[in-house]
Length: 219
Image (tube, rainbow, N blue to C red):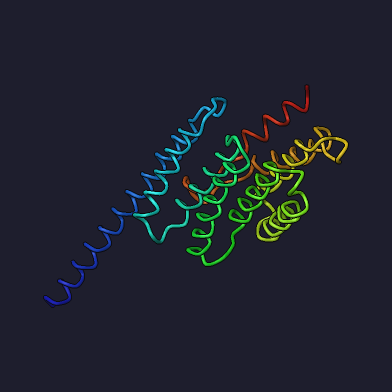
């Protein structure tokens, strides 16, 4: 009887410890995501996003079995590539993003719709960095990852946000433009209206940018 009681107490204390560790992880992630979303993107420079990426990296180091800190670190570096001055600087950020994304997928043991979307975003940014020399290589990669994400979860609004943004920033003479992008962005916004992330720390970006592009299309 005493052995059973001791074992029950041991299991209870172990569960309490695991719960406390998980709660600490979620709190750290929630706070870091809140600070990331509060960054004023209109201001130039990568310092604020770099600080956020560093925080996600520290969480990732402490939480070896969690894919989300690595995913969000990758997202930060993709965003920083927009602020890099030279093609080399942009690629350096994107190389870091790709490394963290690979780690996230290794932990997951598969490609999810969210990692496929972020891979599409990464290819999109490599293309934007040097469109003249990369459209033949990165363009097909972007399309491949978008299609992969659609097969995994066609309700993911970030799929259509990325498709729409690609069209939005493509000149009309090359088949893009605001008018062509509008129905795709409207579809993205419709998907965002019903989308519910798996948790408060799962991917939930793109709606604000979708709304901005649609507002520009009406001007």
